[in-house]
Image 1 (spheres, rainbow, N blue to C red):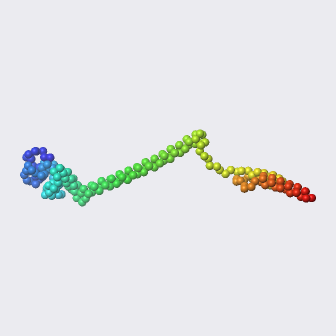
Image 2: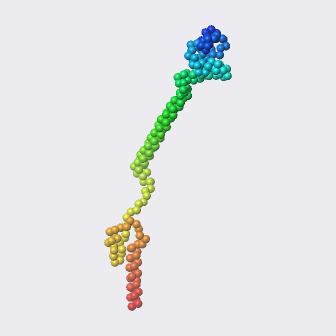
Image 3: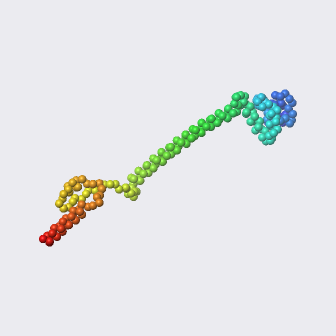
Length: 198
């Protein structure tokens, strides 16, 4: 706002344009006399007539924001005549993208650290469980194939030493004990029958 309520001191716009600053001056509330560079930049880039047109088209509550936007764009264009404020925006966007990549990498590291800590805790919990005999006794253990010795044959004893010295790791569908026992009974019965016939 202007430092003088009656606009006795011309605003920066009227002073630059070398005209009398009237009480209803459109520029006076936004270009005070102590900020001459602000109006110089805006006038150099946009022109006084365009600024007046813009201020008349917007609402009075939006005029201060419009002037600040024009001043920022004009200053950026003077610093960088090629890109202006677009160059500043592009630079900020690149910084945002770079920071986003760093944030994604940090989140990935946190996820890997969390998975590693979870695995370590799971292994530690399993070790505690197995160390507890009451809990470990309730965990079923898968049976494994064990060597089961083959029974020694009964009868004449042929081959008995071989089977006893070399047990098989699996059961056979027949029993040598029953086989020799039945054979012995059958043989004895047969002999008895022949003896009866004779």
